[in-house]
Image 1 (spheres, rainbow, N blue to C red):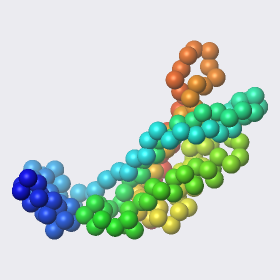
Image 2 (cartoon, rainbow, N blue to C red; image 1 turned 45 degrees about the vertical axis):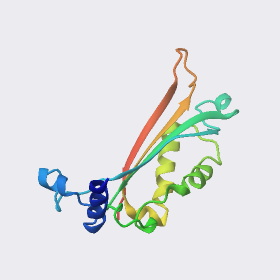
Image 3 (cartoon, rainbow, N blue to C red; image 1 turned 30 degrees about the vertical axis):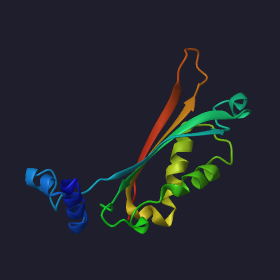
Length: 154
């Protein structure tokens, strides 16, 4: 246990740099950090589908989100220095207020909605998967999905 306490202490003193990783050359001060926040398995129902029949009833969706952080923020312990994912529910509720025809549109609008948030400055990219559960195809399928990834400008 004392070794773990020393490692934790070193982590915070060095701003999150691990001596072991630096020794092995896995991370150096010039290497860009790419920490990721992932919010997976969000379930909601929305009016989405290519046909009027599909849009007439709520369709079950699963949404997975990934946010690439610009900076390594773990050592700071400050919510202001990272992306606060507590806004996810509000963003998704706003996006799915109106019916949509395509999963591609939904995924793109979700990314754009997150990019409009002030805290988006903490991000280098956003990736969204929107999956329609039980899609309307003849063969039994768990889902049909679309991935959208966008780089975020400073």
